[in-house]
Image (cartoon, rainbow, N blue to C red):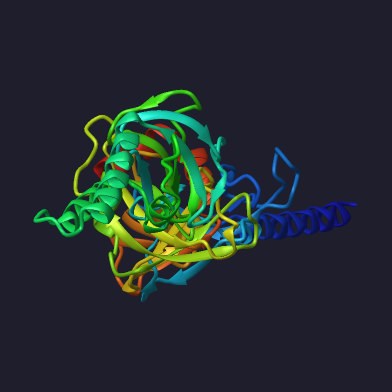
Length: 403
């Protein structure tokens, strides 16, 4: 009986010692710990399940990270879709997109002015937007002064016929009277009819010297017009101006020799090309904006003054460090990226950004050629850092960082 009891005691001691040895082997060493891939704040010295999600804990190695660094395990990198790329110098196009409005080309606008005062007895174009062909009858004017000049011309003709042999040169008198009629807007054909019929009509017809669309019509039938007063304004819409507003900070990016592309929300799928014809050298005091004017050919007459437009000015390509837009975290006060310091260790860095083109952004400073930058999952890294160390810690670390 004593021998049996002694045997059982020895067996139990051996089993217990094996269990203690196995348990001690399962505990992590000093440079390792067990954590949850979904909840990295769980850190235990031995294996088990996560008290939050009940997943099996995984073994990771401890590492020394600085305040602006974060360590992830392989599972976190996989689940967070963390991807990196090496930043290098590359070409980037400086595309400047501006909002604009179409307006008439003032260099092709014509003001039809009265050469003599009188009453507008009849207008033949009464609506803004009407097209006026060249040579079309515009209006009829009653002018007492012009009618008197017609009578003087007829009288000079009559005297020349009856008194041609006298010492007075009536040809000069006729030419002087004719020149006055020409200066006051009558045509050679009208004067020839006057000479032929010997009758001076009370109303004088005036014709358009150019073609265009009526853009201003300040007078109505029956109103008087003074000498030099505008009867109507005609605009040639064969080309238009796209006038775009440019902020003061953008003026240095404009290449005057560049060809601009002009797009219109009202004409989807259509694009017009034009050249920069004017850049206002003065900045408006109140709005801090300037004006850039692009001349756009209006082939087919599809474009109308007042239409909204987008102007895309593509300047010369330049070589610079660039990143995908999603790699840069911006909050209005600072621009930050995450770089890979070592395997699964990521470090935040502040950067100075430049121009944007498509899905790329220029990095002016803060990074060097060859840095390995997180291009996918930067926002998740940011959230994980705040989750582990807190938002206050991040603000403090970013304030101490230098580009």
